[in-house]
Length: 111
Length: 114
Image (cartoon, rainbow over all chains, first blue to last red; front, side):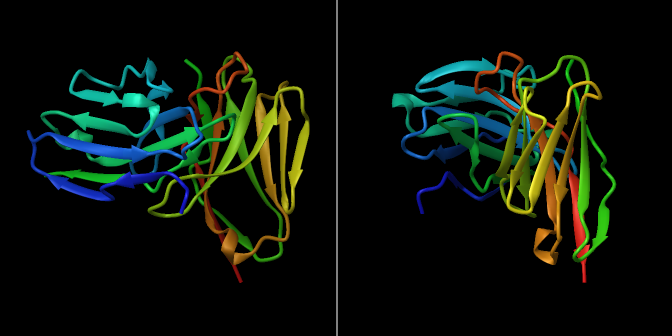
């Protein structure tokens, strides 16, 4: 399968712990996006990379959140000191043009 | 700030009929709108893109319109089938017209019954 992949698919953690998610985009795509989605809502933009450069971050992204895309390939999203409000589906998408291709998401549950 | 509004109530429709979903936006006219389909527990899947200078776009049983006067896009599925049951998301790109982050609506859940 040459689509966008995300790992893990599910993560349960205790409040205060750190978690890290990985996204592997479609190989020829230079743009990579992270979104967060809660139940009954559409995806909300978190951050965006073009190649290895992080070009935009949402105001939703507190200083507990950090994302990287070393070498312009895969990306990681880390959440430090998780809170119950961080529970959501974290979606990664990649694109070369207008259309964005989404991965299956990582569902985070913070207890 | 720009908002994308979709009817959050589910749309129930009988098989074979045409489903019509609405997307309204506030403030500035986006350079383009996109429509995605999302099934439970999965990421959204791109369906169609329509630019502000296009009034209509079609793909198989799907049709999208863009009315900048009404600040509205309509998404139609003709001859609907139970397999079309899903949540449909409207999303806008930035005003500059370049490929960029998307702002999504809440989505409308479509249920097609036999």
